Image (cartoon, rainbow, N blue to C red; front, side, top):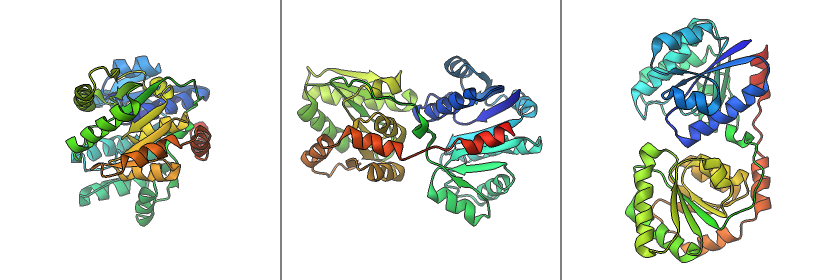
Length: 335
């Protein structure tokens, strides 16, 4: 029995992180004789959702014991090793990695985005830890170049969500709007987007996706109110659960979050991205889907035309060009 401990931003019910954990656990369960424990902020949610063991992420006594008893520690995915959110974040995830190394475990850095690291101490800690890990994989070129400059051997992988087993289903007469609270969010975007939705999709159900309820729900409620002001008869719903299944049935999606866009592409859904982050812009350009800036200066008639002209086959073809390579992890796990 190989014992695996997983560390990441889990249990906070953030869609992207939970989706990554879901595909990771699904894959690990296909391998024989693995015992999985996840460090989580909500152990009941994690254990019931994924049918694995869960340990409170800040219960250091249990965390240390779990790592000590494990054979492999997986850190990731996501952007864990950064100090922009807070210095405490990089210290916590670095401590977990350091414990894995201290107890002489196999330590895997799983599809992470490294940085930004603004503090010299952060750079010192992260660079010295990663040099000693068994396998380092990163999800973007910037992270790869950073580690290369530090003399660290790393593998570039695509996002794990590309390995999602997605079979296109019958589409419903609905359009999805996925918004997230962010420093560049503004009323101009919300108002222009609402007017666009009412004018072009007034005959459809509008599903407004809140992918991290603690952060995004109030914004989604605000957007729903703007829609209702423009058209009181519009059929709307704020969606907080069963996200992948609900996205899979949409006819259209307009979304901010990278993983919402990625899931939609996996199901061949006509998608328009909202450019709040460079990773979203890059994905939109690669997939050749329309893109709205945060100041919403675009010609929305052209955006609608571009959205309508998307072909399901082309979107599915694009998503299949990305192949997440599990073999490099399996080799280490089963060795």
